[in-house]
Length: 331
Ligand SMILES: [Zn+2]
Figure 1 (tube, helix red, strand yellow):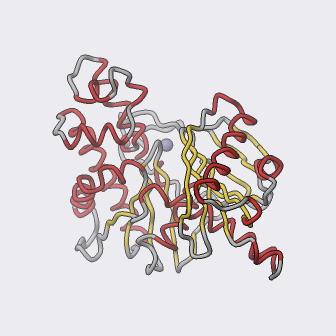
Figure 2 (tube, protein in one colour):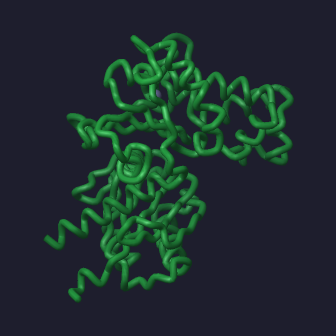
Figure 3 (tube, helix red, strand yellow):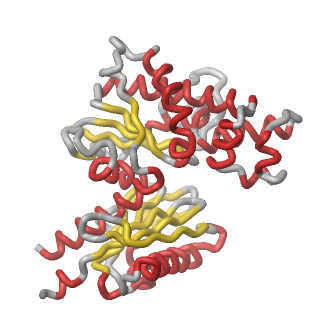
């Protein structure tokens, strides 16, 4: 057995602004073990990299796979990355600029590492193992802290002229008087329909005295409000949460309709934490809104589905990048 073949497993990491997910994958991309940690970006670069390494090592322990059996680690990062150089150019949620992440990770982990943008990782995951498996042309919308997207054309991830494609969170859906977006513009889809925007609207209303179950569910600490709490309040019929999330669904539907009108994909595939927690309630509302804005709308033309991967889309894509790097080096 050659040295290379002996190392048959890869690790996929989803390094987000709030949490780190890691999982060990076998040759068939089955998860053998996983781990989750808070990112704690306030610890700085070294602190975060140490936490990534701990998260990887604990996933290995839970999979009962030795370090020596790992061929490579792939990491999805929320920001602009230079994949070939292994450098994170800008990651606003982590406050990283021109960081040679691959070099730093390889030093910490003693394993080859590869980088990818988190949304591109998620799109690759959907293409290989999710509901994009049998499709050649589709668009992914990931609803999380922000809203990211990935476009697959003729079975390839469409990266755009400068690698900047898929910024669907910054489609303008409220041209006048919309809320300010993190990008500096107003009325972007992300500013009205991301989990971050939904949480901001709910919290602002509570602070103004509106009654909501969210207040009890977070024990009065609104900094703890995440998808799970929103989902619980929604299912319990909380009026405030229902109004704000239904409003978000309307805008996500408008965004999906714009994409359908421009690209004519086989499907628009939704993922991310909020969809995982509330997909059953949100998808019909998103479809209804999209149907009202698509030219020649029909159920066939307006296919809007769940990714089928829950929280795992990004780690699967990161594992695919690790595997692709190993295969390139073996050739
Ligand atoms: Zn924006």
